Length: 130
Image 1 (tube, rainbow, N blue to C red):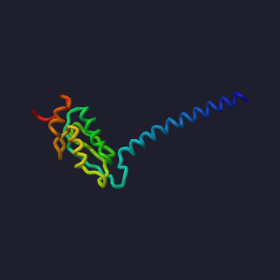
Image 2 (cartoon, rainbow, N blue to C red; image 1 turned 45 degrees about the vertical axis):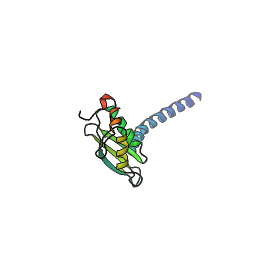
Image 3 (cartoon, rainbow, N blue to C red; image 1 turned 90 degrees about the vertical axis):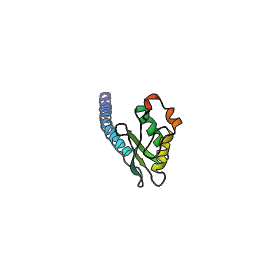
Image 4 (spheres, helix red, strand yellow; image 1 turned 180 degrees about the horizontal axis):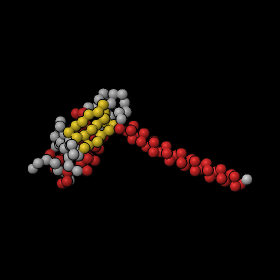
């Protein structure tokens, strides 16, 4: 009798583990898809030219963009020097986002970073021609 109970628990445990391992991958894919799609009805996608030169720039640019309230997604493409954004246009604007990025030291299509902020960037982050 004890053997039957132990076998039942062991099989149940294996079944539980195998079921959960399959759904975890599906849930991860679903979560990634949700994070990349607009979260509100009024959310829109925009692109903004932003100058930079390295991975540190990428982190700084994305962090500055995401610091603006109602920006839900920001991803900077180093090769294209382009920032992809999702935000609620009823609550913020591309101009506000651009100013935040410029304040962090990166020129955009709309705003130039203050010289004192740009000059304080690490040497690898300098993108302006001398």
